[in-house]
Image 1 (cartoon, one colour):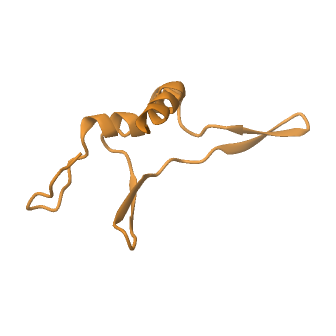
Image 2 (tube, rainbow, N blue to C red):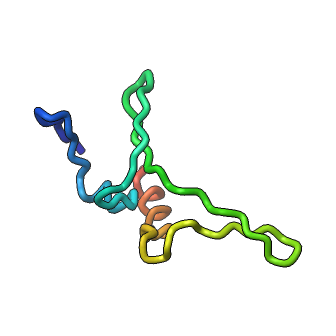
Length: 84
């Protein structure tokens, strides 16, 4: 997919890519300049460790309603079908 940069320096990320990456309005992105181009990565808060009994359990720091819905099975199938 192709896109362009407007006069203000903004880039529109196509809807299909935003949906696949779980990006919503206001999502934080980390921008890195690399040799081959620019990398955009969604900044996701990491889990917190909570002691349950004698074990440490990773619990999400984002409320359930705010987490992006990602269909992992569909992503795997899409990736399998991408290559001949």
